[in-house]
Every structure is written in structure tokens, then in C-alpha cells.
Amino acid sequence: MSEETITEILPPIRHWPALDLSGTDFDPVLTELMREGPVTRIQLPNGEGWAWLVTRYDDVRMVTNDPRFGREAVMDQPVTRLAPHFIPERGAVGFLDPPDHTRLRRTVAAALTSRGVERVREKSRRMLDELVDELLQDGPPADLTATVLSPFPIAVICELMGVPAADRQVMHTWTQLILSSSHGKEVSEKAKREMGAYFGDLIGLREGSTGEDVTSLLGAAVGRDEVTLEEAVGLAVLLQIGGEAVTNNSGQMFYLLLTRPDLADRLRTEPSIRPQAIDELLRYIPHRNAVGLSRIALEDVGIQGVRIRAGDPVYVSYLAANRDPDVFPFPETIDFTRSPNPHVSFGFGPHYCPGGMLARLESELLVDALLDRLPDLRLAVPADQVPFRKGALIRGPEALPVTW
Image (cartoon, rainbow, N blue to C red; front, side, top):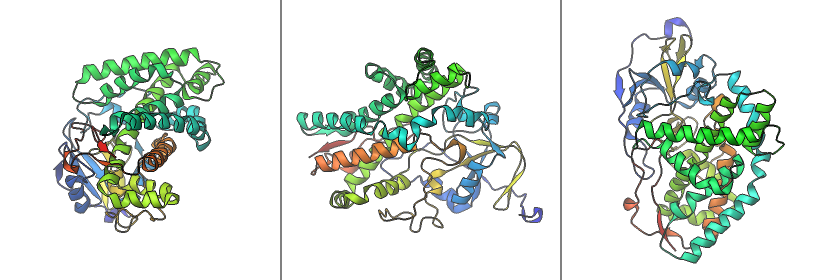
């Protein structure tokens, strides 16, 4: 784009409050921002100043994959943000840029490839079957979140990480305290320190290990001096916490299927379309509130005729990109035959979610088990009485009361 076509007129700053949205309602503020332009300016409830917001699919992919936008520089700026407390740690993988970011991710890649994820498929299916056996044994009504959608992802991520089954509950407790904004910064930081200390001990015990789980891979990498123990611990904490996001995603997925029985019936009668249908549900579900982590422009960059100056913070919205009509015709429609479906629900570029394949596997196992084993599964309360998480960064039902 030529310099002449880049505008210097700044768009107005739009205040984006932290909304407690229920169901799978799309954020009305984000809808307005998408209408307003491909590049807008926002102010979130915490932090300082304003930031650019990019919402179009192609621009989102460009920003997330362009080395002119960096994560490390976020550490030194009080960027406007959704989270009330911000606990970045220097060297944490989410705040690294290549080549350090690439080096760190490479250490655990084997556990998170399709082969690595397949390694835990059968064990995951057995763990899920046991949970559904208990659910059927106890009889209806039940809270699907408490009985299946929460314990299952915890069991799977602990299996992949190499965390002993006896420690699953303490991991879950730490994760909830780290992710919740309602307990305050000190409680959150303490939980993060305790989880970090736990992984420090576990990884330290596994130097020289030949195991295929994440902590064994990290222990071996530390033993070979490829990463420091601090880097390994930071990555382990991030992966462990991220593993529980499936609880919220699958909660929204089943809320959608139970409030749209036509969709659930189709998945029961046409099991062959399930993997494609899950991709479409992942595209459609609004996984989070507002936006995640920002990037900082490291030099002046033009996007859609707007000049982003060096030092400016920039956010992308994957939710908005997933509703870009130029890429997804009729984006508000859930279309199980949508193909291609290049959604960005797991992010894009170097910071693409490392657990994307694992999350897909878990979603497929959950859909198979719950739809096939509970053919009469339905909500036990009216849809508008399903409680959704308040003050959470990641959206999802707090409880999903069901009967069958």
C-alpha cells in the first residue's frame, strides 16, 4: 500500500466493557466494532490507554504471523486489557518471540502432534466411559459440567502432561484460582507459584527421561541444556491451565446442541459428519470474552489504509475473524457441511494453541459418548436458566443441568 493511501485520521476510541454474556450470544460491542471498520480503537476495563483492534480474517492472520508485531514488548507496557490482574513472567512462552519461542515450543511438540495425541486416545476414551458409567448409574437429573465436562479434560491433560492421577484435583483447584478474576491478584499469584513449584519438582525428577508425556519431554530438554528449568516450568503451567479450556468450550458446545435439538439429532443419525460438525461448532462458539493478549507494533505498519505506529498495542479478534462473511458465507448459520472451514478458534501463527489437536480429540470423544449413550439427553431447566460464568475471561456454563 502506498504512503499516500494511508490515513492519519485516528478512529474514535470505543469503550469495551466486560460483559457477562450468557449462552452463545455474540458480543454486541464486538458486532458494532466489526461494522465500524476493519481497524478500530478500543479501551478495555483495565490497564492504560487504548489499543488497535483488527477484526477481518485476512488482517487477523497477517498480524498474528508477522514478525513486525511482537509479544515480548507487551511486558514493558501497561496495555489496556480485560484481565483485572496481569501476571506475565519474563520468559513465559506466551510473551516470547521467535527464535526463543520456537525453541521452547519445539521441546514439547512431539506430545502435541497428531501422533502424540493419538497416544492418549484409548486411555482418554476409557476414562470418559467410566465417567459416563457413573453418570448413568447415579441417574438423572445431573450437572453435566460437574460430572463429565470438567473431570474429563482434567484427566486428559494430566495424562498428557504426566501428572499422577492423585494430583488431578489440586491441579484443577490451582487452575480455577489462576483463571478467576474474583479472588484477587494475590490468590491468583499464589496458586501460580504453587503450580510452578510442583512442575519444577516433577520436571527436575525427569531429567534424562525417555517418556513421551510433556513433563518427561521437558525434563529431558532441561537435561540437554536446550531450555532452562524456569522456561520449562512456565510452559508446563501454560499447557496445564490451557487444558481445562475444553470444559468451557464443550460446555458451550453441548448447550448449543441441547438448545438446538435438530443439530443433536443430525449428529446422532449421521455420525460420519461429526468431525466436520465439531469444526463448525468450534468456529461458531464465542470461546472468550473480549480479546486475549495484545501484540506491540515494532515498526510502522499499514493495515487497511490505517497507519499503526511503532509502539502501538494491537489486538486481534479470532471471534470476529470466524464470522468474516468474505471467508465464511452466512457466518451466523451453523452449517455442518461447511467446507472449507479454515477457522482460527485455536489462533494462528507462532502462538497457535499447541493443544488444538487434543481439544479436537476430546470434543469428538465427548460428542460420541454423550450422544450415543444418552439418546434422550436434554436440558433439565429452561435454556435461560442455565447459569453462565461471571467475570471469566473464558466463556462457558457454570453448570449444565441435564436429564434423560
